[in-house]
Image 1 (cartoon, one colour):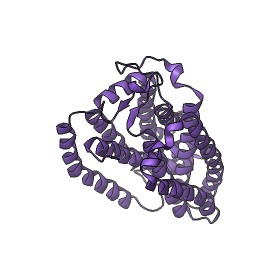
Image 2 (tube, one colour):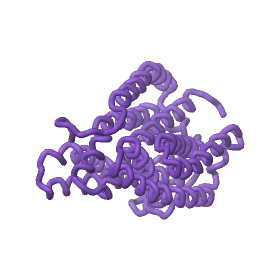
Image 3 (tube, helix red, strand yellow):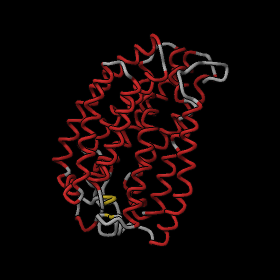
Image 4 (cartoon, one colour):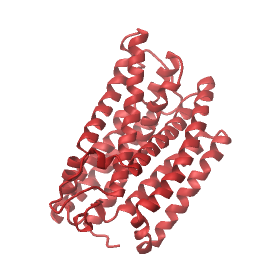
Length: 340
């Protein structure tokens, strides 16, 4: 594998995507599980567990989008044209989730709070599904012609494999979010969350096997890069170990151990997604000559080098900000007069 500036930015985008998947992934999962939590007090605890964190987590998505636009503008344009409606729905979902968190406790009427509860859960679930749908289509390919234009329709994006990946994304976030809630809650609420975690983990394990098998069938080129970089099989092994450790850690009632395993699983899955895709950014189902690769869709090398310098300066600030916020709001969630 040639580690040039284009490859650097492919893996740089992978790091941003992985960070977003781990951090905002549990936000989505908390939202998906929200309606299964009973009682206004407990639902407020759930909201406040992510209240100080969710907007900071989305910095990783904003940075990813800006880096993709600057480094690979043609891939960015083609992806937006192809996923126009799904991306609009993602934006609506992210806005709906934020508004739900902020507005829910502004009024005490049960109907008011019930509406925002449903909005929060629906927005979180839809966003998780649509991100998975995008990943599934990136792997299986889209109808892209020689002028690098998307020439399909919405039906071309809603095929069985991307839908399966979308459902898998929801199950993964639900498990990850449930494990996060186990870290942030205690007593009866933690016991109820643990039951939800067991169900979501079972769903994750079933879908993990199904998606892995479907990927080998639908995306036969997914393992090609492992021949050029055999050391990447180590990540496959670590991924399997992390997945197998999840039910063990949950059975031992070790939520921190289980959450770390869940985070490692998501990081490994993101890496494997990149390995299956590289050096492509978007795959054409019409002709492989129409694929948008890290070379055909990239900005000039001067631009990429300048971006690299900026990234080396900026990423420590993002990482430091994230670390400080999580340190300040560590521990169990409590309600006070400033809570949501």
